[in-house]
Length: 170
Image 1 (tube, rainbow, N blue to C red):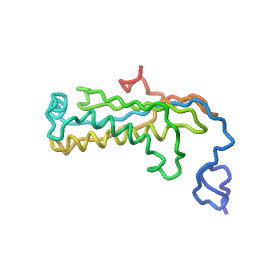
Image 2 (tube, rainbow, N blue to C red):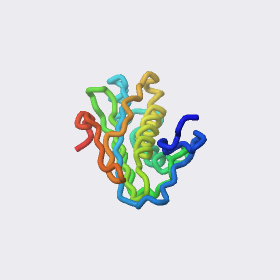
Image 3 (tube, rainbow, N blue to C red):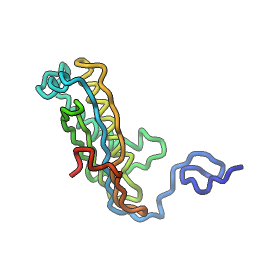
Image 4 (cartoon, helix red, strand yellow):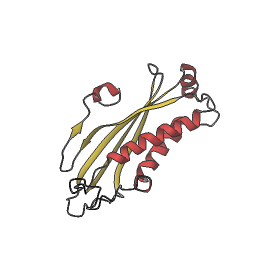
């Protein structure tokens, strides 16, 4: 039988388990994730002009991302429910894609990090943007969803090597 003791999400029998974080100290933690929605230039122009048949594309996508971050533990089976202190979703037009860049920043003071909350916020914001604009274009592409930085916790700060290319981080 393989040794599963080094894998935090598996018990000694190799079954999935929620990690016990009760012995960890609650510390300030932050995570930033990004992603894109690429579309035809005309679709971007119409969204920017407010010409979507479904209404406020970007406002709806931003709120959906915030709501999704708050529901991450309900969506991802082994995630801990966390008290979120901040969820910010920025959706920025980029004619060079063409499309939108999405960035989510999530903060908490807890025993475990908020990487999954930031990634979930970006994912659902992108899906909502697609849903709100699909009447304009069905060929939009959601992509590049990734964690770009995190702070706090035992492992300390981490940043993706290419974070400066996201166009959103400052």
